[in-house]
Image (cartoon, rainbow over all chains, first blue to last red; front, side, top):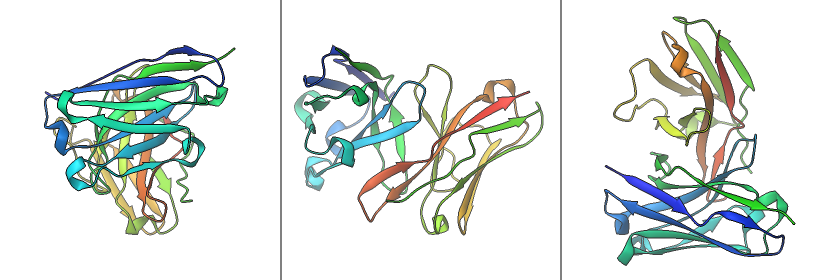
Amino acid sequence: EVQLVESGGGLVKPGGSLRLSCAASGFTFSNAWMSWVRQAPGTGLEWVGRIESETDGGTTDYTAPVKGRFIISRDDSVSTLYLQMSSLKTEDTAVYYCATDGGSDSGLVNWGQGTLVTVSS
Amino acid sequence: SYVLTQPPSVSVAPGKTASITCGGNNIGTKSVHWYQQKSGQAPVLVIYYDSDRPSGIPERFSGSNSGNTATLTISRVEAGDEADYYCQVWDSSNDHWVFGGGTKLTVL
Protein backbone atom coordinates (compact mmCIF):
# COMPACT_ATOMS: atom_id res chain seq x y z
CA GLU A 1 0.00 0.00 0.00
CA VAL A 2 1.35 3.39 -0.96
CA GLN A 3 1.82 5.69 2.02
CA LEU A 4 2.95 9.29 2.06
CA VAL A 5 3.37 10.97 5.43
CA GLU A 6 4.17 14.67 5.63
CA SER A 7 5.73 16.29 8.68
CA GLY A 8 7.49 19.46 9.73
CA GLY A 9 4.63 21.92 9.59
CA GLY A 10 4.05 24.53 12.28
CA LEU A 11 3.97 28.20 13.14
CA VAL A 12 6.72 30.40 11.74
CA LYS A 13 7.21 34.16 11.60
CA PRO A 14 7.28 36.07 8.31
CA GLY A 15 10.75 35.93 6.83
CA GLY A 16 11.48 32.65 8.57
CA SER A 17 12.28 29.20 7.22
CA LEU A 18 10.83 25.73 7.55
CA ARG A 19 11.59 22.32 6.08
CA LEU A 20 8.81 19.87 5.32
CA SER A 21 9.39 16.15 4.89
CA CYS A 22 7.36 13.50 3.11
CA ALA A 23 8.17 9.91 4.07
CA ALA A 24 7.22 7.43 1.35
CA SER A 25 6.59 3.70 1.51
CA GLY A 26 4.84 0.97 -0.47
CA PHE A 27 6.45 1.78 -3.82
CA THR A 28 9.88 2.29 -5.39
CA PHE A 29 10.49 5.88 -4.34
CA SER A 30 13.67 6.28 -6.38
CA ASN A 31 11.70 5.78 -9.61
CA ALA A 32 8.95 8.24 -8.69
CA TRP A 33 8.47 11.83 -9.70
CA MET A 34 7.03 13.78 -6.79
CA SER A 35 5.05 16.99 -6.43
CA TRP A 36 4.10 19.37 -3.63
CA VAL A 37 0.64 20.95 -3.64
CA ARG A 38 -0.70 23.47 -1.14
CA GLN A 39 -4.12 24.67 -0.10
CA ALA A 40 -4.60 27.95 1.73
CA PRO A 41 -7.48 28.00 4.23
CA GLY A 42 -10.85 27.98 2.47
CA THR A 43 -9.33 28.05 -1.01
CA GLY A 44 -8.48 25.67 -3.83
CA LEU A 45 -5.45 23.58 -4.70
CA GLU A 46 -2.23 25.23 -5.85
CA TRP A 47 0.66 23.26 -7.30
CA VAL A 48 3.95 24.26 -5.66
CA GLY A 49 6.54 22.30 -7.60
CA ARG A 50 7.91 18.90 -8.50
CA ILE A 51 11.08 16.88 -8.78
CA GLU A 52 11.90 14.22 -11.31
CA SER A 53 13.50 10.94 -10.36
CA GLU A 54 17.28 11.04 -10.32
CA THR A 55 17.43 8.57 -13.19
CA ASP A 56 15.33 10.98 -15.26
CA GLY A 57 17.58 13.89 -14.37
CA GLY A 58 16.24 15.11 -11.03
CA THR A 59 15.04 18.38 -12.54
CA THR A 60 12.84 20.63 -10.41
CA ASP A 61 10.07 23.01 -11.48
CA TYR A 62 8.28 25.57 -9.34
CA THR A 63 5.27 27.81 -9.50
CA ALA A 64 6.18 31.50 -9.87
CA PRO A 65 5.14 32.66 -6.35
CA VAL A 66 7.66 30.33 -4.68
CA LYS A 67 10.49 30.33 -7.21
CA GLY A 68 13.73 31.42 -5.56
CA ARG A 69 12.33 30.87 -2.05
CA PHE A 70 11.39 27.16 -2.02
CA ILE A 71 13.63 24.21 -2.87
CA ILE A 72 12.44 20.66 -3.48
CA SER A 73 14.89 17.85 -2.89
CA ARG A 74 14.86 14.13 -2.28
CA ASP A 75 16.87 11.50 -0.46
CA ASP A 76 16.23 8.18 -2.18
CA SER A 77 18.27 6.33 0.44
CA VAL A 78 15.56 7.04 3.02
CA SER A 79 12.62 7.40 0.60
CA THR A 80 11.95 10.95 1.66
CA LEU A 81 10.94 14.09 -0.19
CA TYR A 82 11.69 17.56 1.17
CA LEU A 83 10.42 21.07 0.75
CA GLN A 84 12.78 23.73 2.08
CA MET A 85 10.88 26.97 2.47
CA SER A 86 12.58 30.28 3.18
CA SER A 87 11.65 33.98 3.22
CA LEU A 88 8.18 32.85 4.19
CA LYS A 89 5.24 35.18 3.70
CA THR A 90 1.82 35.22 5.30
CA GLU A 91 0.37 34.12 1.98
CA ASP A 92 2.35 30.86 2.23
CA THR A 93 0.02 29.78 5.04
CA ALA A 94 -1.55 26.54 3.81
CA VAL A 95 -1.82 22.81 4.18
CA TYR A 96 1.03 21.30 2.17
CA TYR A 97 0.53 17.92 0.48
CA CYS A 98 3.08 15.70 -1.19
CA ALA A 99 1.94 13.46 -4.03
CA THR A 100 3.31 10.92 -6.49
CA ASP A 101 3.46 12.58 -9.89
CA GLY A 102 2.48 10.26 -12.71
CA GLY A 103 3.19 12.83 -15.40
CA SER A 104 1.01 14.73 -17.82
CA ASP A 105 -1.14 11.73 -18.77
CA SER A 106 -1.65 10.31 -15.27
CA GLY A 107 -1.94 13.17 -12.79
CA LEU A 108 -1.10 13.12 -9.09
CA VAL A 109 -1.89 9.56 -8.19
CA ASN A 110 -1.31 9.22 -4.43
CA TRP A 111 -1.46 11.94 -1.81
CA GLY A 112 -0.34 12.33 1.76
CA GLN A 113 -2.61 13.67 4.50
CA GLY A 114 -0.96 17.08 4.51
CA THR A 115 0.84 19.24 7.05
CA LEU A 116 -0.23 22.75 8.09
CA VAL A 117 2.16 25.66 7.78
CA THR A 118 1.11 28.91 9.43
CA VAL A 119 3.11 32.06 8.74
CA SER A 120 2.20 34.73 11.26
CA SER A 121 3.84 37.22 13.58
CA SER B 1 -0.33 30.92 -18.14
CA TYR B 2 -3.04 28.37 -18.83
CA VAL B 3 -6.34 28.93 -17.03
CA LEU B 4 -8.99 26.35 -16.09
CA THR B 5 -12.49 27.59 -15.27
CA GLN B 6 -14.97 25.62 -13.15
CA PRO B 7 -18.40 26.61 -11.83
CA PRO B 8 -18.16 27.36 -8.09
CA SER B 9 -21.05 25.10 -7.22
CA VAL B 10 -23.32 22.38 -8.57
CA SER B 11 -26.34 20.92 -6.81
CA VAL B 12 -28.02 17.61 -7.54
CA ALA B 13 -30.65 15.38 -5.98
CA PRO B 14 -29.71 11.88 -4.85
CA GLY B 15 -29.97 9.32 -7.62
CA LYS B 16 -29.64 11.94 -10.34
CA THR B 17 -26.68 12.78 -12.57
CA ALA B 18 -24.22 15.59 -11.81
CA SER B 19 -22.06 17.20 -14.48
CA ILE B 20 -19.10 19.40 -13.55
CA THR B 21 -17.42 21.32 -16.34
CA CYS B 22 -13.85 22.52 -16.72
CA GLY B 23 -13.17 25.09 -19.39
CA GLY B 24 -9.84 25.88 -20.99
CA ASN B 25 -8.46 27.02 -24.33
CA ASN B 26 -8.32 23.91 -26.56
CA ILE B 27 -8.45 21.74 -23.47
CA GLY B 28 -9.43 18.87 -25.74
CA THR B 29 -5.77 18.65 -26.79
CA LYS B 30 -4.64 18.04 -23.19
CA SER B 31 -5.08 15.19 -20.72
CA VAL B 32 -7.47 16.21 -17.96
CA HIS B 33 -7.47 14.78 -14.46
CA TRP B 34 -10.13 15.12 -11.78
CA TYR B 35 -9.81 15.05 -8.00
CA GLN B 36 -12.38 14.66 -5.27
CA GLN B 37 -11.72 16.34 -1.93
CA LYS B 38 -14.08 15.70 0.94
CA SER B 39 -14.17 18.05 3.88
CA GLY B 40 -10.99 17.87 5.95
CA GLN B 41 -9.40 15.20 3.76
CA ALA B 42 -6.68 15.02 1.15
CA PRO B 43 -7.63 15.02 -2.53
CA VAL B 44 -8.24 11.72 -4.30
CA LEU B 45 -7.72 11.12 -8.01
CA VAL B 46 -11.05 9.96 -9.48
CA ILE B 47 -10.46 10.38 -13.25
CA TYR B 48 -7.18 10.57 -15.19
CA TYR B 49 -6.36 10.87 -18.90
CA ASP B 50 -9.76 12.44 -19.55
CA SER B 51 -11.86 9.37 -18.82
CA ASP B 52 -9.90 6.59 -17.09
CA ARG B 53 -10.74 5.54 -13.55
CA PRO B 54 -8.10 4.50 -10.99
CA SER B 55 -8.75 1.22 -9.28
CA GLY B 56 -11.33 1.51 -6.54
CA ILE B 57 -13.21 4.40 -8.12
CA PRO B 58 -16.86 3.49 -8.85
CA GLU B 59 -18.04 3.24 -12.45
CA ARG B 60 -20.52 5.99 -11.62
CA PHE B 61 -17.65 8.42 -12.19
CA SER B 62 -16.85 9.17 -15.82
CA GLY B 63 -15.14 11.89 -17.81
CA SER B 64 -15.04 13.38 -21.26
CA ASN B 65 -12.97 16.07 -22.97
CA SER B 66 -13.45 17.86 -26.26
CA GLY B 67 -12.94 21.30 -27.71
CA ASN B 68 -12.77 23.85 -24.92
CA THR B 69 -14.58 21.85 -22.23
CA ALA B 70 -13.88 18.79 -20.12
CA THR B 71 -16.67 17.26 -18.07
CA LEU B 72 -16.79 15.07 -14.99
CA THR B 73 -20.07 13.15 -14.79
CA ILE B 74 -21.29 11.41 -11.66
CA SER B 75 -24.23 9.10 -12.21
CA ARG B 76 -26.68 7.95 -9.54
CA VAL B 77 -25.32 10.51 -7.13
CA GLU B 78 -25.05 9.50 -3.48
CA ALA B 79 -24.80 11.60 -0.35
CA GLY B 80 -21.19 10.44 0.00
CA ASP B 81 -20.28 12.13 -3.28
CA GLU B 82 -20.68 15.55 -1.67
CA ALA B 83 -17.23 17.14 -1.99
CA ASP B 84 -15.11 19.67 -3.83
CA TYR B 85 -13.99 18.58 -7.28
CA TYR B 86 -10.94 19.94 -9.09
CA CYS B 87 -9.81 19.53 -12.69
CA GLN B 88 -6.13 19.62 -13.60
CA VAL B 89 -3.89 19.68 -16.68
CA TRP B 90 -0.19 19.93 -17.37
CA ASP B 91 0.74 23.27 -18.92
CA SER B 92 3.61 22.22 -21.14
CA SER B 93 4.35 25.81 -22.13
CA ASN B 94 5.38 26.63 -18.56
CA ASP B 95 6.15 23.15 -17.17
CA HIS B 96 3.47 23.60 -14.53
CA TRP B 97 0.52 21.68 -13.22
CA VAL B 98 -2.61 23.84 -13.34
CA PHE B 99 -5.73 23.30 -11.23
CA GLY B 100 -9.18 24.65 -11.81
CA GLY B 101 -10.71 26.72 -9.03
CA GLY B 102 -12.83 23.82 -7.81
CA THR B 103 -16.53 23.03 -7.79
CA LYS B 104 -18.50 22.31 -4.63
CA LEU B 105 -20.96 19.50 -5.28
CA THR B 106 -23.98 19.62 -3.00
CA VAL B 107 -26.31 16.64 -2.76
CA LEU B 108 -29.76 17.98 -1.96
